[in-house]
Image (cartoon, rainbow, N blue to C red; front, side):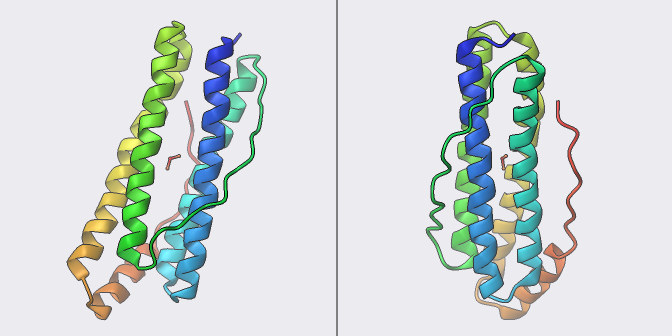
Length: 169
Ligand code: FEO
């Protein structure tokens, strides 16, 4: 059985993951408008990953005999317009998510829920990968600068990203 505080923390995080899905969907739409299909594909994979992250916790709360409560998802605010600005926000957002996973682990430690800690370990590792992946694209974009050919080549590269349904936990 899940501790009440732990359950609340999981329900909050389900909301954050689904918000991430929504935010990346909004960003994907901007890249559609920029006619960059590789970036659109990259965000499409990102959207699916965030949904999987949210549903992974949704399933886990049930597995532990808890109660899932879904909250309203905020309107996503994309702050920038250029690929660099958008990816800066993605990195910032992923760093925020990492801090949330750490906070969730703090709760698990506080209530001595070792099973939840072990489950959350997968999310922590995933965040390391996410930040590294996003940071890599951002570094490439900064290197490219205003070079249209470079952007074209990076777009081609991002077109090859595929969604592999994660095995969570
Ligand atoms: Fe679910 Fe991108 O963190």
